[in-house]
Amino acid sequence: MSVNTIIKAFCLNVTLLTCLSSCEDKKSAYEEVKGSKPNIIYIMADDLGYGDLGCYGQDSIETPNIDKLASEGLLFTQHYAGSTVCAPSRNSLMTGQHMGNTTIKSMEKPIKKEDITVAEVLKSAGYKTAIIGKWGLGNVGTTGYANDQGFDYSFGYYDQIRAHNYYPDYLMENGEKIPLKNEVIYIKDSTHYAVGIGNAATKKVEYSNDIFTEKALTYLNKQNTDPFFLYLPYTIPHGDNESWLIKQHGMEVPDLGIYANKNWTEPKKAGAAMITRLDSYVGQIMAKLKEKGLDENTLVIFTSDNGPHEEGGWRLSFFDSNGDLKGMKRDLYEGGIRIPFIARWPNKIKQNTTTNTVATFWDFMATASELSGEPLPSSSDGISYLPTLMADDKDQKQHDYLYWEFDTNLIRRAARKGPYKLVTIKDKKTDATTVELFNIEKDMAEDHNIAKDHPTEVKELQTIINKYKKS
Image (cartoon, rainbow, N blue to C red):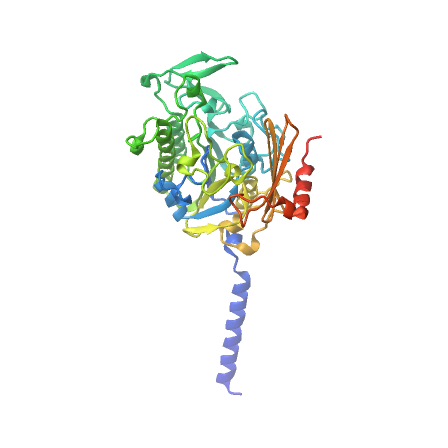
């Protein structure tokens, strides 16, 4: 064998070994971002429906900034809220627990002292943490006070009921009342005193959600090298319950904007204006991130706490607020719990993509844990959707099942396993129970109850529901 032949063979072997070594060492996009500690901004609307955004099919309400967020990121088609109403859904998001295990199942309790929140997890990883907007999980002096639950900074509504008024007389900042210029009157109805706002436009000076945005922009101005978690739960487009007491429509907004001359009722104009105003807030947040040079290292999530409402003159059928889904807020049909969910992270999340991955609010803690490098608390029911964000389907784990419950005069339960979802509704007055089974993959509108034809699936899902029955 010639010397040249020996040299060529040696070089070929070295090249092959180098290639194999580099291939073995190369990490997936998912592995690359685990523990990378990006900034996280979690923007949440209040009662925004699956079909209320242009990127989800809305054609009457303009949402250009949120639509742009979707075009620059990933849109989920099967993301679920923690519950079908505000407080328990937010509790699920913060604690990483589904309704079978979490403290707040309706609207009556603060988070327990021993509950571990996603803010506490991220704070342990060195994050600065802030909540600006509607907390709703405990006032000052309770175990649910935001600053005792992992947040360095808090501003907005601590109280769930006060958040139903867009022109309050004060908001809370780190446990202190911050007076506003709004003049408040007190109206007595047959059961209670309620805070309301006078009819004169001059008495409605400071709109709470505008203030939230100003505070968020100020907060972002102060951020530099340390990672931060900004939880930004707006109250738009929830109805303003206080307006109902003084016989105004309950969709409150400073102006009707581009909808002022539409041939719609005032509540419809106002509701559309609320959503477009929310969209403008998102645009301001994104502009500030770019201005500050924070854009590249910030994961921005946009979502809603539950499905759309029919309160204060809003009618979801007019705008198809629930899209092709059945039901709305307070239902456990898809329209009450399936929500818009968009994630954007430049050069990490692929632009203009869509996923059918089934994910939930109680998955956020697991996702944040992986991003921060902190261990996931054993109390969590969640599964990280970080692989899905990184388009790494092979590493994406799946839930064995999903579970929800909500009680009023009707005892509602729902469980989903694979394509099948069982919904049971028991009427407390008659003790009658309806049992409905749907194949969500084939029938997302839940038009066809197939319970009689699938007794095995009904039994399996009923066993999951029975697991969380109250004693």
